[in-house]
Image (cartoon, rainbow over all chains, first blue to last red; front, side, top):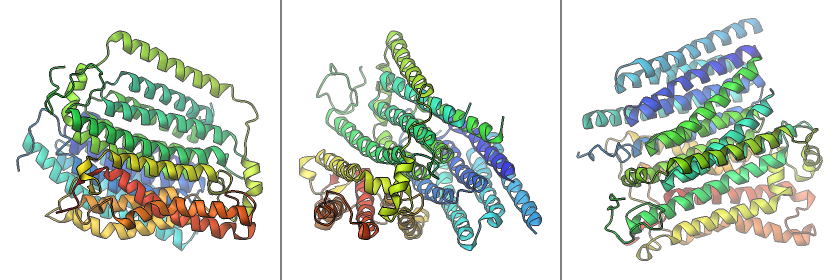
Length: 94
Length: 97
Length: 114
Length: 315
């Protein structure tokens, strides 16, 4: 079972790491944020699986911390999008 | 009994991992921001949810299990609202292009 | 290769990468970012030293781990101060360049002729 | 190759890839997103190194808070990015920098491979003395007892950097409210989150801080979570940053170091040395210090993020 949990942790981590290619390709900042959001959720899942595999209950607290800070960071990033656009685009006019 | 629980864990975690696979595939392959967002929320809600479900029997008590569920609920709440915000930002960006 | 060696080499590489970024990136904000990257490598090195000292029922030597926690907080405080200094420089001079020969007191936002 | 090593090699490759990308990507916004992922991956590395306390702190401060801080600066300095490209150093300088960086990395790697065997460790010494502190988490024991002077000075350093940030305000705005005004989100999704999440988050922060005595956790990650919830409410326009001239704010900011110092000086009378705890009350005193610290850390980190005063207090 330990081997299975470790393998599952590795698989989830590999999947979200692949998703990071979206940060490279963009094209928009919204796409980059989605990849970061997926990485956050995947990171939480990986932490929980790792913790179960190695029997370290404290990883659940690390996952809790990560979940709360990920929400905070994502909200801050979404709010930063209009101002942090490509410099060659015009400012939003709404 | 423990065999049944192990099988349950393995099945749920495999299903969760599948949704992470699907979410990543969607994020990479879907044509525009809003469809990608659709794929992402599946990984967020179902992927993590199924992984948490699979880990519940191994949590070693009611309180740790409740903590796992609380983490999932937090991510669920955040994902519901953040994906709205990301969707709005994506629409704004596509209009600027 | 053990995980200690693996992560130790990773820490060394991260320090090198961060140092390179710190030296070649002209924009001060990218320098601050590189410096934080470098810091991650240094902390990782401490973590590896702590992991080698596992014993007495602990997964690692708690003294270097406590130092890293202190270091993380101080690094954040230093980063916050550096960022505010940079923003103030931009507010005063209208540009964020660190060049000493940059034309001082130009009109705000007009540093396009560099 | 075992599962564990494969996983760790993959993790190391991820950290390295994200680091290279943070340095090489053109847009600062993308670089900051990558830096947050870097911190997240490092959190997993800390778990693999059995340093759960560090993992918690890294997840909270190293990744989340620093990333958001840099993002705010990137948004404000966007106009200067294009100019900086023109200042890129020439090939000669870049080659020299690469050579120097490679040399430093090689020296560090060599130092790693020649570390003494068996490794020096203070773990047995820390564990032997731990029962006297009443703590069960060795890292908290080290932070609060054997290296208490470090922790005290660190509090002071963070406070001084906040004074430094404030002193960069324009003279006429001194005493005003930090940062720009965030308008309330009219459609309400963000405001909804900012009303529902912070009560849960603050409880979680206190819980993480409370855990610190016996398990991984402590005042740093706990205080950071509370600061993040405060900042979330500010970003959504649900609450506003307080003017820095408020007396209660100043009291909260010095509460942590003041309690720490008071307990430290009382050590002269009760245990015969500065920052020494009488054994019978060690745990109680450490808990008192930690309560003050959580409060101060949350307020200080939140205000460091908010920046210098930019709006006058007078309407």
